[in-house]
Amino acid sequence: MTQQENLSDSLAQAINDFYRRTDELYHDAAKRVGLADCTFEIMYSLMIYDGLTQTQLQMAGFSPKQTISSSVKRLQQQGLVEARTDGRTNRIFLTKAGRAFTRRKIRPVYDAERSAAAIFSPAKQKAIMKSIERYTEALATRFEALDI
Image 1 (cartoon, rainbow, N blue to C red):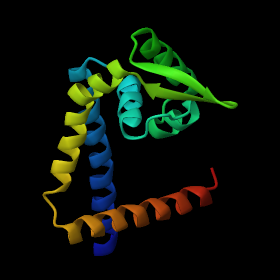
Image 2 (image 1 turned 180 degrees about the vertical axis):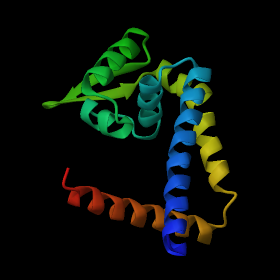
Image 3 (image 1 turned 45 degrees about the horizontal axis):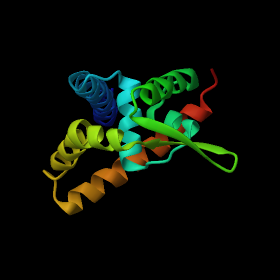
């Protein structure tokens, strides 16, 4: 194996380890807040972009449609979200209680993410974002080309 191949193997493993570790960190954060992963993702997404459709929530959290639907119903029963229809589109919004909940429980996670990112200079942050985007695009291209 060449040095380039060894380095590529190491990088691929480091990226896989990163995804696994961050997934564990977010799972633990959701647990500490007292929410299931999907419910945490919904509240987090609504904190940032209030008024999302269930399809948008599904794409934001990668949870199946049925899981999103049942989680939204549960959050409605708890008084944390409400559904509103604007024309033909049903959108989910935080209630006053939901906004208070996210300020107390979800916002600290968001702030921790920003604080962790701030360990890098602005130039390094831009370079990391560009590298992640470039890697993701390359991976998508290669996955699409697979004959499986």
